[in-house]
Image (tube, rainbow, N blue to C red; front, side, top):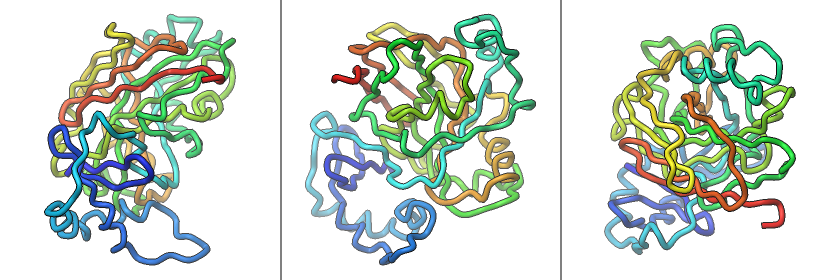
Length: 287
């Protein structure tokens, strides 16, 4: 399945170039009361709701994908976990470019581990990215995003993919500078997820997916997830040594070489094999 959230928090299934409005399925979610449980309730119940999705398709209103506003397919992630310098060629370019490393030694992922991004930075592709510090260099970083489907801790690499609900395209936008990654990558709108969630059974092997980002039609980053240093299995196991992973948690798996600056007015066209394409517009604070 391809599951999206669109317009005013409508729930949709993506079929070809259409979105089927199946918002009524959300009525089958368990009632909640304060204090709210951790995690994303829809993601946690995806498997249980599959028959309801199929039934709702019969009478669903259809919309053209191009006519809707796409939000993040995960509404309530408990945490966004990100993997730095997880492609060898990106590590090399980070060490060579002073505009990236700012005079500091760029450690390998084995040395520095993962980091957390603020969940308040999460948006969908139609919401766009805001350049709120125009005096600073702001770069695009395209990645495979893994969405956790069930709770787990101390997960083995062998079992890691059993905990995945699905996959999406992730953009880990960053300002360059001397501050810690969690600060520079957590500005509002600096985590883009979309265009929809492709369930794990439909997506297949996360270690062999081509992807590319073009800025205003110019290819900037083009790679395959087979070149990850820590692949999806290893990242899940590594993160689960420190954190309890919960439904809706997002793991940004890292970006390849080719990172470069973006500016208001730019359009990022992101594509990933077995997921699809999303366009993300860049605007300034005033826009």
